[in-house]
Amino acid sequence: MPFAVDRSVPGLIVKFGNYPLHHGGVGAIRSLGRLGVPMYAITEDRYTPAAASRYLHRAFPWRTTGAEEPARLVDGLLRIARRLGRPTVLIPTDEEAAVLIGEHQEPLAGAGYLFPRVDPELPRRLASKQGLHELCVEHGIASPAATFPAGYPDIEEFAEKARFPVVAKNREAFTRRSRPAVNGTTRIATPERLRELAQGWGERPGVILQEYLPREDAEDWIVHAYFDQDSTPRAMFTGVKVRSWPPHAGMTAHAYVVDNPELADIAARFIKQIGFTGIIDLDLRFDRRDGQYKLLDFNPRMGAQFRLFENEAGVDVVRAMHLQLTGRSVPEGEQRAGHRYVVENIDLPALLAYRRSGYTTPHAPHRASGTELAWWAADDPRPFFTMLARLVRPGTRHLYQLWRANRRGGTAGAPA
Image (spheres, helix red, strand yellow):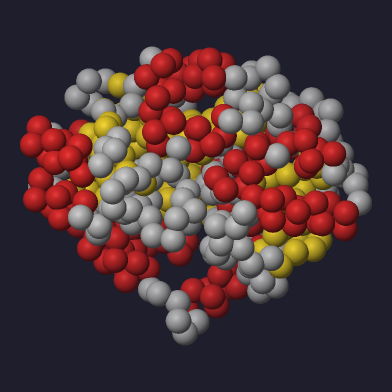
């Protein structure tokens, strides 16, 4: 590597909720661990893929749901800080963690944690579908047309005028309610189906009803980047999503690095306007009907597929953050165009589903210049086998069953 990291400053993977098969956390552990940075992680138990990594110095088993009171979660992080006993870079892997860190910066910084300092209200606003839509409108960033019904009368009025199909999403990217309004991104084909679903949303439906962007007229793009305290990009990457799981709506299953200066410029200008600092993971859909990139999701943290992206100097967004927060320079370099990323346990069912739909991604290269696997690594094989063991153990729902459950709620129509 043409750069040296500060090995005296460890990293801590921060995650809240029960999702042990998370390849993004494993990728972050490997990314910094291979450079000699001591890595720690909050895990559901001692037998998760992350806990099995040879690059993890220690796991902190802590079962959470994401519905805990913030004070309780902050207290838990402060206890871990006392056990670590030295400055540590926080690496959130979900919105709950990113928002918690943003809203409790003073006590966490006082405990020795290192993280990008940001407007405390901004991560929650960006993670919210309504907050993000309002910011897009305010700053002239294209996004799907959307409405936010305050009650059933608004839904009835929308059903009379809207062009179907439409997409329904939970208004907040994460919810502390016991019953979310919809199961992820849900495509609703008819007004009758909308009225039927709305009967279970209560007096104050926490949903966004959004324009459906037909996949036959669109392409799914990804932006990952790290921005410093001046909202200047220190590492910027663009790519195209080939397959996701659930199909056309979920997490990335297969993607390629594709140079897109126009998209990078859109992201950089938006971040500068809102003053964000830190790692971003953006999902955008290019609408061929009007030639616009429409911002669908803004994750104010590391994305699970971040290891798709690395520049010629060997810098990814997690490494860029650690370097910058520890006072090191972040080497520049071109991204690895044509490189691909495959999530083994979800790409096969995604491939079968996409073949049935006939969907293709025109900008995907015909041949990859290299491949990064989410789970398998020759120098760190145990997370892969731990993933397989947890995937097939009794009580684990098969991926096809998960897809069927998603389809019963409505066919997804845009990336979540």
